[in-house]
Length: 163
Image (cartoon, rainbow, N blue to C red; front, side):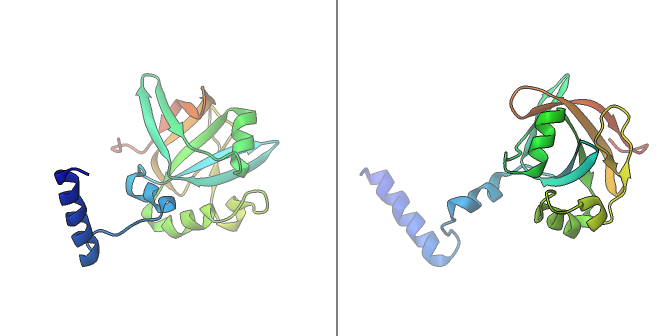
């Protein structure tokens, strides 16, 4: 061990004892680096609409707009996204934050989330999954799933003066 690494250990030990720095479970580390905002993703398969909460996403290209999304294969929405190759990404307002959490805590396999959480589906022009009326503008209608978990934006909409 070098002198410098011993110094760092002493400093970290002192910080931990003082409560300034504490160990985090590896399962919690992502909370420090995840991108924002938390969004809602809608899908539609065999006439059934679903919505899920997603916090792991990022823009990976601008022309055409590409968004990388992390959707677990265990999520009900995953099968619809793979089969239909399209979704809508909607940015919720802060006044429905508690609803967004609840949406993320239940499965579309057993719950009609639009009905359960009184969300209003709105017809999207270019993709089958609906927009959500209660979400902030601009909404990104995302479709045409690309390689891996990257989707290409095919249309965006928003109120005048936003974005």
